[in-house]
Image (cartoon, rainbow, N blue to C red; front, side):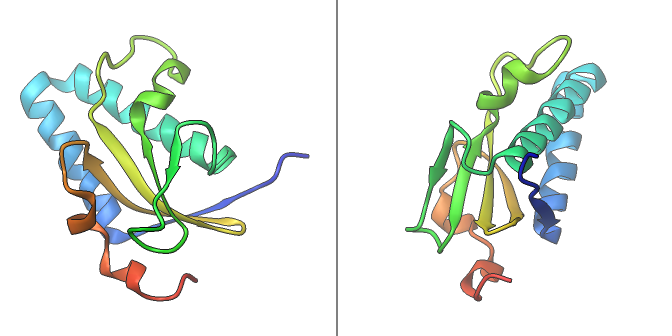
Length: 124
């Protein structure tokens, strides 16, 4: 039986998704925003299937148990028309059976400036 991981989502992560969706729709149109949304959902499913899957990068320099995962690593797992050049990554914390999604950030952002203050606390 495959191992099961449980997800939690920081409020700022949910906001990041809404803002990314709105920006994508404004810049590229509804169909492109829908494709990007599918890619985000696939990346989250992939991380819940295996939080240390190929493509993840441990970032203990940011906070304990912290990882990043670029959306490009889930691109080929989305059915239908694919996003050609995804530009975001997921910042998350993985401890035991829990994956805590913290941020969805553009890959040009300075990671250290965008680690949520919740990561200063001991993981739950």
